[in-house]
Amino acid sequence: MSSDPYDYSLSEPDKPAKAIDSGLYIVATPIGNLADMSHRAMEMLQAADLVAVEDSRVTGKLLHHLGLKKRMRPYHDHSSDADRDALLAVARTGVVVLVSDAGTPLISDPGYKLVRAAREAGIAVSTAPGASAVIAALSISGLPTDRFLFAGFLPSRAKARADAIAEIGNVKSTLVFYESGPRLGATLAALSEQLGGRQAVVARELTKKFEEVVSGALPELAERYAAVEPKGEIVLIVGPPGEAQVEQGDFEAALKAALEVLPPARAAKEIAKRFGVDRAEVYERAMALKSGA
Ligand code: SAM
Picture: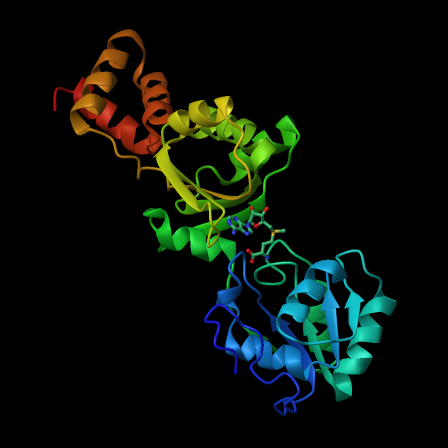
């Protein structure tokens, strides 16, 4: 056994693989730190007759690191039925492992059609669960986690992105997005414009050397990242409507000021947007203020 505490290769790669029933195994791999590779994930890879991969260079490096040599076959969202059939033919009597470049397969990664086809064909499907950036980021964001909506990557085109934000903006859940450095500024600007002052978190390079978690209201973050394009991989989290850290005094003062110049519905709309809170609740408070409550 290696004495290096950071050597996560299988301690005895030549040892016969643990007997694992035939089927399709969805195996999570680390999102940055190789020490997050689970023991079961390693056992499943060791037992694999075939590893379905996004990129054989990326998975090849991981297998090499684990001291394993395995037959690999590319698998993508646009893989054909014939590609799936070929993988499932092996899974009927052997062990097929699906991995993605990093994290949990199928989460903004290929695999859903393969799992569906395996289930329809009566082939056992099981998993070695593990790292996924969405869960890792949520768990350290400090934003509510009881209800969250994972929306993957927003579209890059402004109109499609605005439509997607409008579609989910009022859902009473924390929103989670995957994002890239070059697009972050534009995405934050659009979110700030449409969702107002909601609290948000930019979680970058999780589990890696330059891990960073920055929180603030959407307009603050939009300003910060308009000026600097961050490097690395990013999860962007936006708190639910009404969860903004609103100072009650500021809110009341702003609403009263708005009511002096605008009708209640318009005032409620403006203030709800500015403070990132629910419009109906603001309207209710506006009507109460109007009636002298
Ligand atoms: N299947 C993966 C998972 O379970 O997290 C996600 C794959 S998706 C193609 C890749 C995106 O996940 C990146 O663009 C980034 O938004 C996010 N991501 C992956 N690793 C990350 C990390 N270490 N820190 C922050 N975000 C990460």
